[in-house]
Amino acid sequence: MGKLDGKRIAILATRGVEQVELTEPQRLLQEEGAKVEVISPEPGKFKAWKFTDWGDDIAVDRPLDQAKPDDYDALVLPGGQINPDILRTIPPAVKFVREFYESGKTLAAICHGPWMLVEAGVVRGKTATSWPSVRSDLRNAGANWVDKEVVTDGGVITSRKPDDIKAFVAKIVEEIREGAHERRRVA
Image 1 (cartoon, rainbow, N blue to C red):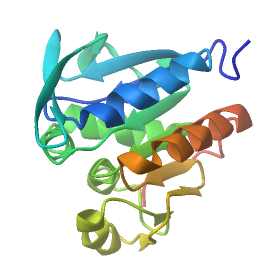
Image 2: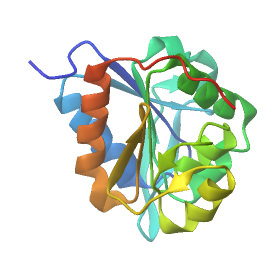
Image 3: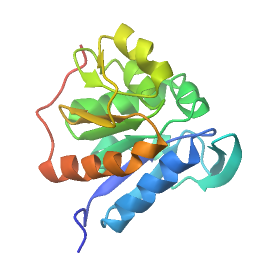
């Protein structure tokens, strides 16, 4: 029996996602018994980024236009510079993140993934971490940025980089088991 048996987790990503920030949380969450689906604005597959060059193709389990926050217990936003920069220009992706935040369910972003939290307008008053280059964006959006392996504030989990993935996933598991937080509103 896994700690997440019966739980459904979405990973929202597109081309240029940092491969390990998608595949490693996906694997670890599946090992805990969760059903993990990759959702993306485009159906089919997209190319991941692997540290310094293009990586593997990632299969899309469900196109974004067929996904609803009600279908999942948690949402994971992996980073890489390209992936969240593309996603934050796609209004349905931003809307999905905002609605997920408002649902009170676990929302987790790593590395450059917090750019989506900024774009969705959900970080004001939150303590968060990220890849160092995202620090000013988080601060300018009203977040209290800290340099820590993983930070949780009201069910919103943030982490800095691939080296933090194990702590990031452990916190996701803990938050999902804790259950939904009081409904949050976008300020």
